[in-house]
Image 1 (tube, rainbow, N blue to C red):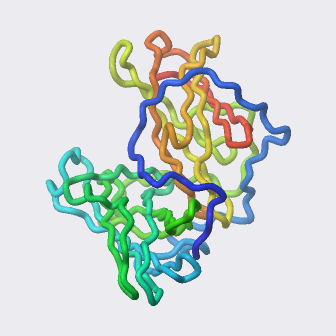
Image 2 (spheres, helix red, strand yellow; image 1 turned 180 degrees about the vertical axis):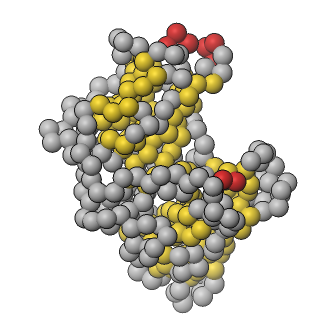
Image 3 (spheres, helix red, strand yellow; image 1 turned 180 degrees about the horizontal axis):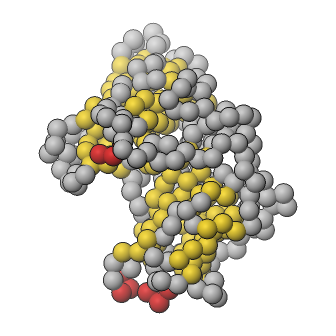
Length: 326
């Protein structure tokens, strides 16, 4: 089953942390009720049970354009060590194939596809692997004959601890002449044995939002992880994870959350990290969680001191987290 976004989402897969330094911006005041948009209609289905409506298993053809096209994702296969350059120890490269098939009786331009891969209960975003075989002109319009198809191979890098965990894939398919993509979701298990210590899932139901929560804990439908610091001197970088859970049976347009990082007792604005510009913001599947790593410049004088992170949604509602910078 395919679904359309109100606005077009980016068609480029951004992977890993993105370094962002920000300046103060004027944010709208919090909503009076402060409630998350997606309320829970019931218990959140487990990835190990029947998939929710709107998510299909790999190998299932999903219609696009009222049946003019179908899009199929084949399951992930682990690539041999060394097949993709730059893969660090403790991680492996995987490949999956997206097939777009023309169901019409005439030659037509295939929809463009953008793929986002998330793994585990927290839906961490996988890094895209690139090599000489994936640097072709995949963004060029491709003509497909009647009843023909075109393939796109997707390669990603995942930690070895992710073996056996569920992998949820968002495919954004945009037809020629249209700005809005149709959303397709596939989910299966990554090859290999079960991970030794899988992440805890987001809390079920719709927990009440607190005024302030420690970093690393859920506050309503949002979680901001603890901040780690790397580098030296002026090159110090702070990193954290942003998680958003979709408690709805409909897809969410994305994490849609801006982070304002404030340091010290005087709450100095150290950085503002935004969707699209600061991190990949692909749609979130029904009853699933998405987690994105983000980075920012960490003021040297603030390291070791208090840090406050405001998570601001698209409507201006704010959720506050507190902890230590590094």
